Each structure stands twice: as structure tokens, then as C-alpha cells.
Amino acid sequence: MKTKKLKKDRVNVITLGCSKNMVDSEILMHQLKENKFDVIHDSEEDANIVIINTCGFIDRAKEESINTILLYAEEKVEGNIEKLYVTGCLSERYKADLEREIPEVDAYFGTMELPALLEKLEADYKQDLIGERMLLTPPHYAYLKISEGCNRTCSFCAIPLMRGKHISRTIESLVDETKKLAKNGVKEIMLIAQELTYYGLDIYKKRALGELLEALNNVDGIEWIRLHYAYPSKFPTEVFDSIQALTKVCNYLDMPLQHISDQVLKNMRRQISKEETTELIKTAREKVPGIALRTTFLVGFPGETDADFSELMDFVKEMRFERVGVFQYSHEENTSAFEFTDDVPAEIKEERANKLMELQREISAELNQEKIGKEMKVLIDRKESGYFIGRSEFDSPEVDNEVLIEAKGNTYVRIGDFAHVRIFDSTEYDLYGEVIK
Image 1 (cartoon, rainbow, N blue to C red):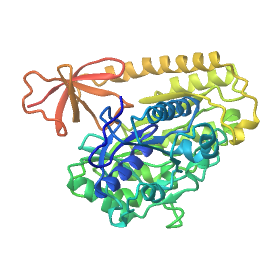
Image 2 (image 1 turned 180 degrees about the vertical axis):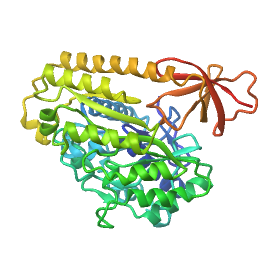
Image 3 (image 1 turned 60 degrees about the vertical axis):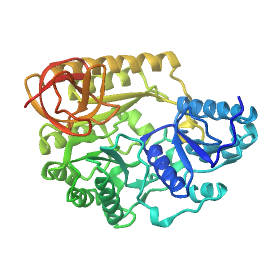
């Protein structure tokens, strides 16, 4: 059905992909709002303009992005929307192909072309709004992007093709943004980047993540600071000292390892060995007792043998990581791994991913069982199905474990607040607790 002409332009922003894309959408939406646009996000409501912020990381993400573009291209053909714009990683990487294959889109923009997109919408890019966003997360937590791009040369990864070289933001700008977030009620910030530990090398000529953490730790109103996407090679171990010493920095680190077989690591160009990886994990746990380590592994990389995968399984059994995610290798053109033959069949990739996650389920169940009887500080994220649902400092939103508290009788528990909770039961990925009055 054709949409009536709205009194003023309404823009529906559709966000696909990771938290870094979400931050980009938040910045875009705030700019539009300040330019007097009516802005909605991923909504079924009528809008005459649609902007799709795409992901181009792996096959499944690219497929979702393309299908979404095609869906709204059809909406435009049918007269349900007036303008359709595409931005983000897929658009950066395949702009010429997309323009040729899906001409219904009015314009395509890359990852760093926000001013050009706004100009197309006849909106001003307001420099004075730098650091201000229209949050898409619940109001009590937010992601803080500390840098853009990546200088690493991992053979499987297309991110440098889409995001460019590493560019750090200044400590001052990040502290200023965090203060604005705290003023608006944010209590937890999650530091994100393509690669956290490279932070500062370009502008300060040294790794400065520890200094950044110290500065953020002093921001009033922020109670938790969480670290995501830390590269293990040449890891600045003084960061562990910061995690241990700074009261607001969670005992949590997301450090994707990708594999453990030396041959696979070499082919992946990860610049680290099994021995060095093992020593790094040992150092983390010695310097920060009780730290929750989250990691991800990539299975089915070209040339990965049964022996390589068995070595990975044995490593996960030995290390007993608190949190693990698993991806299947995607053969990406213009990456150096594309020169290899994608010789691990799809069914073997899936089988290996399932085996690894099944192992992690068992480990997670055992680690959660050990938490029964313990007390912890929990941030309440939402309420559903008769429970308040929150997280401990050892868990990030959407990807990690949750703590469930029965809503009935807990009249003083509020979403966005912290609660002191005692754990009385557990499952593989959830804890059940009661509020300590």
C-alpha cells in the first residue's frame, strides 16, 4: 500500500552487523535528529526514507545485507518509500557491484562518508555534535568506539578493506564522550575497536590503552568499563595491571584467539604461537585472579586438518575459558587467505563448530555450577517472562551469560540499577539468583 506523503521526512535506519556498526548508526541518527528529521530505527512504522547500514564481514552477513537491500528496493519500486540509501561495510567493499546490480538504491556510501550521506539528505554535518549519539542500547549501557580501522594483516579478515587503517581517537575526546553518556544515565561502557591493544600507537607513538582506562575510570557516574576485541599478539600486559587496579574496570577481557595450531596460526598471519598464547593466558589469570576470558575461534580455515582441530579441542579443554564463540571460515575475496584452496567441506566446518560449542557448553555448565552460593553485583538489563534479567561483571550484553531473578516479590529491583544477588542455581549459560535485601 502506498504511503501517504508525511508532513516531514521520516528516516528509518536499519542496522546490520556488529556493535561498531551500531555506534555508527547512533551517530548518524543524532545528526539527523538535530537536522529536524523524524528518525526511527529498524521500525515497521511508515517512513519515506530508508538508510541501511550494512555488514560485509562474512558470507552470512553479506547475504543478510543484500537481502535487506533487495527487500527495501522492492518497497521503493512499489511506492512505499521515496528514497533508499545504503551505507556501511558492504557498500564500502562492493559499491560498484551494488550500483550495477541494485540500481533502485538512490546512492551508496562507504564507512567514512557520513558527511556525504547527510549532504545527500540536504542535512548539515554538525561538527559540534561529535561525541553525541542517539543510543540504540538500553539507556544504562553504551558502546564506546575508541578507534577506527585496523593495521593487522590477518589473512582471513576483510575488515581493513572496509574500515581502512587504524585511527585512534584522543583520550580527551573519549573522556568527553563518556561524560556525556554518564550525564544521560549510562552506567556501563564497553570499549570497542577493530583492535583495542593497538590504541594510541598512531597518535601517541605508544600503546596507551592503560592510560585511557585510567582516565575513563575517573568519570563520575560510570560504574563498569568493559574491554572488547583485544588482539593477543604483542599484548601490552600492563593492561592486566590496569584491570586489577582500577575499580571500575571489569575483570573481563574479550580476546579473540582464532586458533591454537601453530601451522594454522601461521597461515592465518596471527603473529603469535601456541606457546606465546598459552603464556599470555597464564599471565592474565595470574595478574587478574578471577578474570573472565572471552574468546572466539575460527574453524575450517584452509588446510585445517583433523589433527589441528583436535589440538584446538584439547586446548579449550585445558584452558577452560569462561566464554567462547565459534565461527566457520568464510572464503573472502581480496584477502590473502583467498589464495588458499577452501578445502574444508562445509559439512566438516559445521561439524567442527558444533563439537567445539558442545565442549564449551559442558565447561560453561561446570563453571556456572561453581558459582552457586556466591554473591555478586548484577546490572539489571530488562524484565521478561516473570524475571528480571541482568549480568555480572563477567558478562557482556547479548553474547554472554545472564542472571535471572524472579520478579515476584522484588519490588525494589529496577531496570538499569545494580542489585546485590546470591546465586542459588545454574544452567549451561544462565545463573539464577535472589536479591540480598
